[in-house]
Image (cartoon, rainbow, N blue to C red; front, side, top):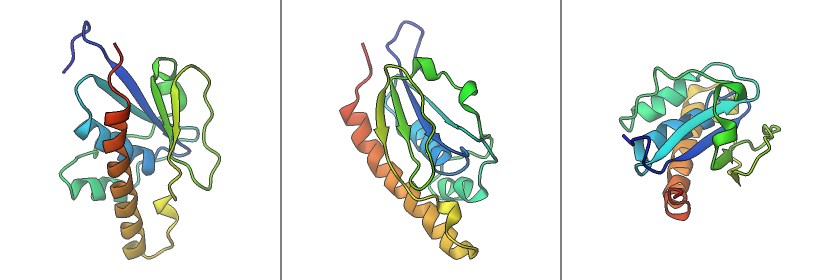
Length: 145
């Protein structure tokens, strides 16, 4: 845990419902971020955390069972150093400010049809893609001084 005197950087993941991709990204980030990062996620139209988002992270020993979907006004957008949008087919939230912006367009895994087998595969695919991108993010965006 960082003290108030240590450098901290703030990372925020945004999508529409804050139910799947951004929740997975928040959970993975909290589990893998180098010391000094504060991690949040939010959506422009928050819904409920998707049970399969919880499940695919539980498969790799990350528990987001207590997470809830949050609106943009519930996270410190004005303190963000990096904002990552995860929308592909939807209109991503737009926020203004000096934060570095990254766009990781990933398909919404919850839209993969009715069969849970296909949805679960889509959620796993989103998890694995986010995990890979996070490894690069930690290298390319060191903690601010």
